[in-house]
Length: 478
Image (cartoon, helix red, strand yellow):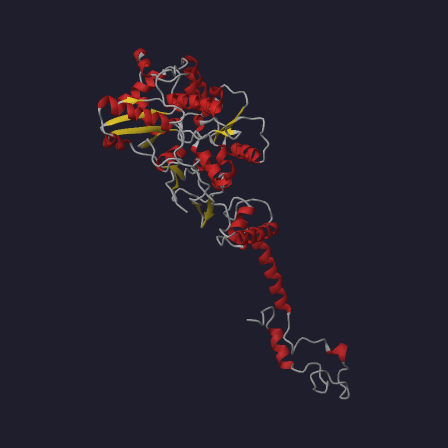
């Protein structure tokens, strides 16, 4: 299976081998082996949940460095709408955009503007195309990869439109090339990201050959540079391009509200998303037309690369939304046909037990048998997230039954009992009843025993018996 770049990585030196990450991973992509976490790359969707829960900060997201800006003659910044919620309310959106120009960018294009264009295209698709309902938003790349890995039957439900980041990148790049007569390789487009999944979507894009974005900068890194030069400027509002509908995309429900369709459902948090996707797969959401699903709690405002608490950021963002105007989309923007995916997304069958169906069924039966014998406590001490995952690892040859501490303890108890039985066992030549029960002592005419010696003594081999008695509890099996 083809591998691809992952933003989420592990720092083994910081890892203590705790089980926080393995229990929270939505695709069970992490195991603990030899006291260290291990990421199964084929299963990882770069949702960043492990970054959020690791108490030792052993998980990290790889992003691009500011030094990359020097590789381009003309540099464009694409701030995500969630970026505005990281700053105190005293600063306007224009102030923040102007500060970006001070730290090395030549132009700023709001991703919120791209979000409004995607909203318009989505409305058009609902009007003109027969879509499979409920339509699932494709704005969150972690959710798209989750569907690709765990819910392949829902791939056709995905909204097959470019993400706002890609739309903003394409428009700003084209505009710069036309305005300044620049070749494409001299224009650098950089997305300011709240999450690791967006990094992966740029380095290993889905539904297209190559991303329009050249680099992805961590929102935390950019924040530190911006806050150092941020100042109020009433004239900076001229840099603002997006309206309130685009800015609202930063929080859960923003995309749905912009559509103006009451038959929608907005879900945030990767485990809540799992529950909803299972419901869709089981045809339990027939009354819903559109489902907005975001991996991070609170939406992009709760991304693992943000600075501010998601609840505080939401309050700050609301003030930007209240001050923003409704954006005019009557100017030239791409048609919805231009925003359609150029490639299909295929299922990544990382969960299947075998390529051969018959073998897969046999392995599944074996898995169920093993799982029934496990305690079902899902303690994680074996290094797998739960007992069923351990059973799967055993079937795949990646683990042993004794990796379960309870199975190991039971086996030790069984072995100990067997050893005790062996300890008490006498060799055949000594394992006999006392002579007082089988013969009379001192009569030469007694019945002979099965040893054939005439039966006139209490023990056939008195010297051997005495030696054995002197050994005490030492095992004769040594």
